[in-house]
Image (tube, rainbow, N blue to C red; front, side, top):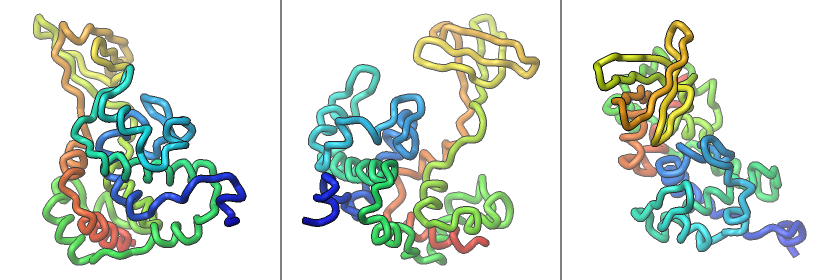
Length: 239
C-alpha cells in the first residue's frame, strides 16, 4: 500500500493536465471563485464535495455545461477541457489541505524554468509594453515572485488592487463617478470622491466600469503553453 492509499486519498493530480486546466480555470471560473479556487464572489471550490471527489471531471461536466442556480452555463467547454480543469482543481485541493504526499516532486516540476527567455522577451514586447515596462513597474518582478508557478499566476491573471471604479450616467445626463460598493445585474452602488453614497437601478442608467484587466483577459485565449513558459522564463530573470 502506498502513502496515498494509506491516507485514504484518491489519485494524485496529473501535472500535465493540471497545467492545461489552469488557464481554462482562470479564464472561465476565477472571476467568481477566485484565482486559487478558494472563493471570491462565489464559494470556494477546494472543500466542495462535488469537486473534492471528482477525479475525472465527471461530476463537474453537467454542472459546467448546463449551469446551476446562480451560475451560468459554459457550453463551449469540451469534455477534455472539464477534465483538465478538474485536475487543476484537484491540485488546489491538495495544496489547500497541505497533504504533501507528492509535493516535493510536483513542486519542483511546477517551478522548473522550461521556456526560452528570448522568445518571452519578444512576446512581452509585442503584447505587454502598452501597459507595462521591464524597467518600470515590472523591474525586479523575478525577485518578488521567484517561484515560476506563482509568477505565471501573477501575469496570467493579476489581482486588481483596490475596489473597481465606475461611471454612471443617468437618463437626464447626470454623471456620477466613484468606487463600486456593490454591483450585480439589477443594481449598482458606489461612493464618490466626497464620500457620498449613490445607488442606482441598472436598467435605468448607463454603467461603465473601469477594467484594468482588459489586456490580460484578451491574451488568455491566445496564449500557447510555450508562450506562457517563455514569458515566465523572461520575467523570472528580471531581478
